[in-house]
Image (cartoon, rainbow, N blue to C red; front, side):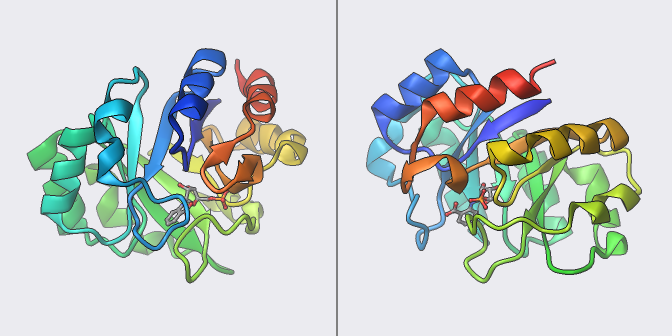
Length: 208
Ligand SMILES: O=C(O)c1ccccc1N[C@@H]1O[C@H](COP(=O)(O)O)[C@@H](O)[C@H]1O
């Protein structure tokens, strides 16, 4: 399975992650209210690191996203708010980056709301609903994903931890569209600082 390690900020920690784990994607949070927010001053140093970088945005405007793609050298944009299909389409067509569209899960999943996004995204991403938009450290009922009706691949996130791995590997074998995991707060020593040994342990268990 693929791995995205989200909420990185400290340069030494990023270098350590890339050298020891080399995840498929590394996430940078550009939501100003997050404790993992990455300021523009870090663009020059982070942009030079060779890894696929995902910018995480919550209802940011097109100009801001475009500017961060350029300054941080983002390969991917993760849209974690209420972005419309037209907006997602504009990002895809005018910037050419890879796009993850997030759907936040409460008790139910309304697949019909996702239909129009299918042709405009590269991956869907499911996270647990929280008023803070993300980084809650909470899981949702993964059984809901067994009814996933699309061929579009997706990543799972929301409070994932090494203790969940057996269940997640089983879920992956039942749902082939679930191609990857997105980890964040459960791997932190403090906001935006990850325990790289713990991430490495996960990576060795899910690599195939
Ligand atoms: O991490 C944040 O602070 C954050 C803020 C706003 C939007 C998304 C955010 N993070 C995303 O949240 C999920 C799950 O994180 P966790 O494992 O529950 O801590 C992950 O996709 C991050 O990209």
